[in-house]
Image (cartoon, rainbow, N blue to C red; front, side, top):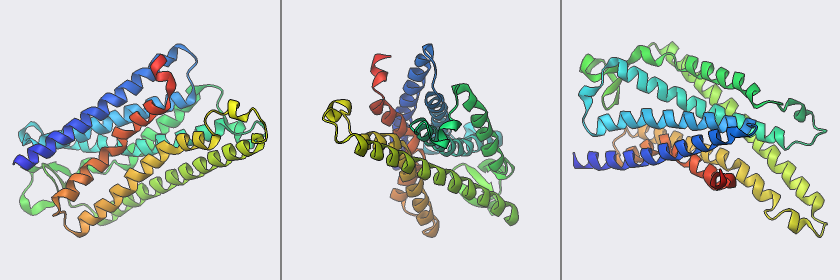
Length: 292
């Protein structure tokens, strides 16, 4: 009991810190709306909102389970929280992928064919963001049909434990269809992320080599272009780190039947790690936050 309360307190503190960081980023980018809004800023606003949804839903799930507030939730609550959390996780990878693509197109040479894809208005990004909501909502649409609250189930019907929300057994074909869709979505977006980030590093490195002979290059580039490229892909690397570490941890827990309490606690943090860390990476990178 004491261990659960300790884990719950630490988890809630980390969740609260992440929510505060994302709200700060959200308000700062909204503050910049006084000027012409950029596509990158609009995507970062969407990413901050997605992170807040992830932290709120996951935080409520953990708070109820860790602090034994099981009677505050019912079937509908379980369905809503877990469904929103799954959709928000999908939106996170979608928005991060779109962000890297927009950044890559922005720094492309004017003669590049990719430059033609650059949107003149940031609001042209909205249809893509709306498409991401539809896509991730459809990929997770099977969840509400087999998520139940513990009080509405018999022990014999339980297949997977989520403390107070349970996943009933579903049709194997349907389950694999949605698993394949999720894996395909993640693979496509991560592939796009990798391509766009590699393209940015290549362009900036090539440009740096071109101006290296200039004596004034030290004045023109206080920060080497390679460092700027590293900063631009840092968000993507952060996402990939938490994503794959979470995958390997989940696999380990599945094979070990989830009996390691330390690994369970680590897995809980990894599921929200990106949502907590990413706003502080943006705050550190964007100098205009302090002048807004």
